[in-house]
Image 1 (cartoon, rainbow, N blue to C red):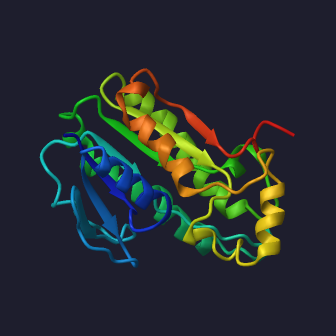
Image 2 (cartoon, rainbow, N blue to C red; image 1 turned 45 degrees about the vertical axis):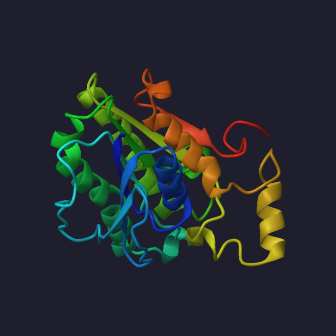
Length: 229
C-alpha cells in the first residue's frame, strides 16, 4: 500500500484522483479548505488553508507521492487586474505548493519511487486573452516543475499536467449555461469539455511505476487545444 498526499481533494480533479488512488488500495491523505468532507475507506480527510503557515503534522513518516491541486480561474481584462490579484494567485498556487513540497521532502525521500505532480494550464503555452493572471501563476508552476525535477533527480520525479477547460466547480461560471458549454466544447478539436477523470487519470499515471522514467515534463491533457487546429 502506497501513501499519497493530495492537497485540494474535496472536489473536481483532486477528488477524482483521491477516489482513484483509494480504489486501487492506496492510503490517501486528502486535504480540504471550504468544501468539507469526511474520511472514508483509505482516505483520511484533513482541513487545510494553504494561504496560511500550515503544518502537515498528520502525515506518516514515509510518503510516496504529493499532488498539489489548489488553483483559481480569474478571467479579466489586464487593465482591471491589480497587483494584489497576482499576489493572491501566486500565494495560492505557487507559494502554497512550495510550502507543501518543502515539508514533504524528507518523507518523499523515504518513499518508493516518489513523485510530485502539480497543475498548469494550456493557457501558459497557447496564449489566450483575459488569461494574464492565470497564466502568470501557472507559468511559475511550469518553471518550478522543471527546476525541481533537475534538483531532485534521480530520487524524486516531478511533473505537471496542463489541462484545458475542465468541468469542475472552479469552472462553474464559465460553464453556467448550455450555450457556454457548447461554445467551449467546440473550441476543442475533440469537441468536448474535459472531465475531472480525464485529468486525474494522467496524474494517477504520473504517480505510478509506469511513469518511472518521466520527470520534468508538462503533460498537455487538453482535448488537442495546444497542438491541433
